[in-house]
Image (cartoon, rainbow, N blue to C red; front, side, top):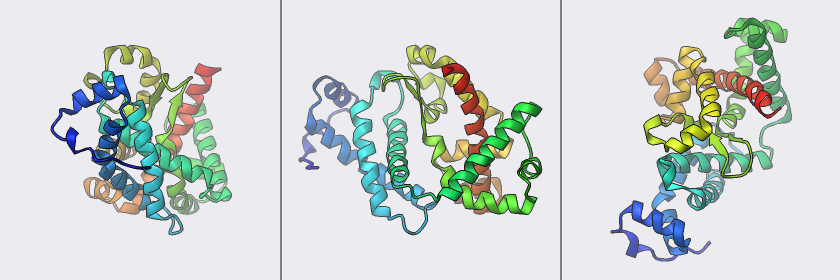
Length: 266
């Protein structure tokens, strides 16, 4: 992709540039935004790379992320009241994980174990009406508590994929990212809040019902944008423990949101 010189836009207010881009689809303005937010791609790719196996190249993650940035620029609607940085990070992450999915970097055995845990958590919590403990999950799976902890460590890379999913109900104009639900309500357009209220409430409720530490990990990682190491310092636990908490949170959320989505769509 050829990027043209965009210095002429450096002294123009960004809000005015967005308005102009929405109206004209001027490619020089798009190039300006690509250049301006390119460091964001490197930052997101850097965070993701820390949880990837060695065979996943950092430069490849950046290349995937650039497509996400361009997608974010093309689809961003300033009237929604969401900060572009927040929206772009969601799209950048999504583009990277979409590409990772397409090359199927997660071993099938790991993927199957992840699905098994999600199903067990979903069924147990639905049956008991409460958050289930590690020991209960392990018992239901027929493994020891130690074996379950080892399995969580193996799943940590695969689990990061899921929270970046978009909740699609139709076309691109009818979507809601879990990341968007972590935005303060006052930052969102009232019309958007009304349109997405039911889904948004379900997602927020699912996050609120997470055990305290798991909920903190989700908010600190996806909203406050801290690394796993930084979260460990905040919670006074090891980085590997943060990774385990993140994995369990993802499993719970996927199970709960899967049931809710099935009820809404079905």
